[in-house]
Length: 220
Image (cartoon, rainbow, N blue to C red; front, side, top):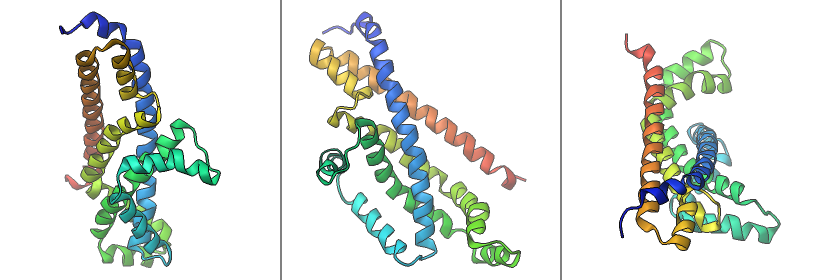
């Protein structure tokens, strides 16, 4: 079967709609997972009663169960207890919980590099634990943990393709749907591979620019 560029161009609008949905679900999940990671890492590092073991159990559960099983539980299992989410929000919740568990550990490692002396100095200056965390500890931890956080964000972006399993019309779903109708396997899979590669490269570039800005005070 020859590569049909004309067919691929004709499917461009459908692929772009799937791409837009992939970007939406991925960006929202990345932001939410970082928030989960910050809160979970803070609870772990500060050894908050009840929250510390709860976060530890959450991280172990997510990291030791298949993401696809988690997705099916959220979409098919939660309605059994009266919590029915749309396709979009089921996907966002699954990706957020999955990546959030890894971001907890990424940021916990970053927070571990914040010296005890900084905490004592901050408290001596009158900062509350919360202000110390979001003004001092969190920025330093993010700077240290950024490469690991980027790896998790990239994995989240690629794992968004799992959402086609519940029928969310993201990029991979659109490609497989077209293959099932037109049997143009090479064109569709080549297209989504290139698109995913471009998305990862853009995400990596943005993260490198952020890392450059965060490291600015330490270059002199």
